[in-house]
Length: 65
Image (cartoon, rainbow, N blue to C red; front, top):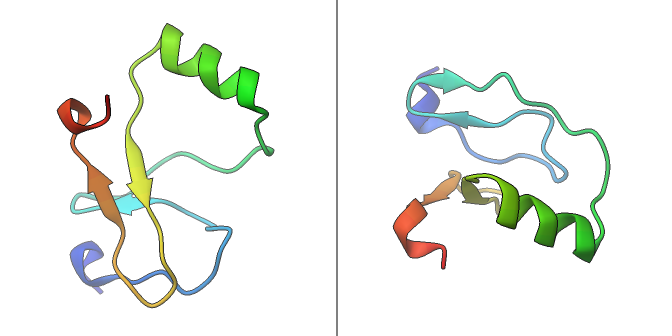
């Protein structure tokens, strides 16, 4: 199956993917508000919206702030 055709079947996700294929990231744990704030201040992040039955929606970095 082409990665661009994949849809979300369950949440939390077991994997993340984009048009290039499955990404090498995995879920570690839930984050608290302060941890999220620190991550956003310290590094560039990519946001994605995941809804069951739909394709992943990646948010452009310039649209995040």
